[in-house]
Amino acid sequence: MKPKPQKNLGKFNKKPARAGQKQKPNFKKKQQKSDKKPNKPEIRNMIRKQKAAAAQAEREKIKAEKEARIKAYKKQRLEKTKVISKRTQRGQPLMKDRMQLLLKQIEEMKGRQ
Image (tube, rainbow, N blue to C red; front, side, top):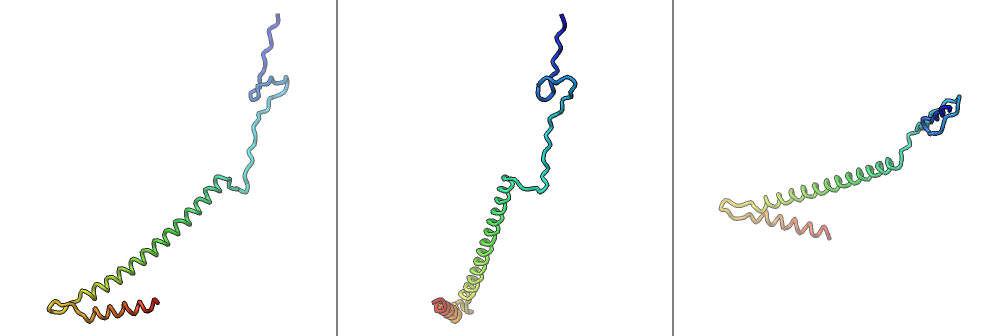
């Protein structure tokens, strides 16, 4: 009996190779991205970052406005406290400064209306 010839299985597709032909490797060439277009997850991340930056800028703007209002209020309150806390040599409150403060408040009220 003759010995059975061994099957020559190809490396990549497990089909027997034809006699006399070399098996070509099946390497697919990846297409090069020349224009570097972002894919969908990258686009989502970019949009998310833009929204986050806009929200951060808005928060900083609001915070700066709030600090400015607080600073103005503290300054006004300090002036009022200085006026009210003035005393005479005998320890009596100065009514002249208190009257000026009341007059100023009345003028502000008229200006608002």
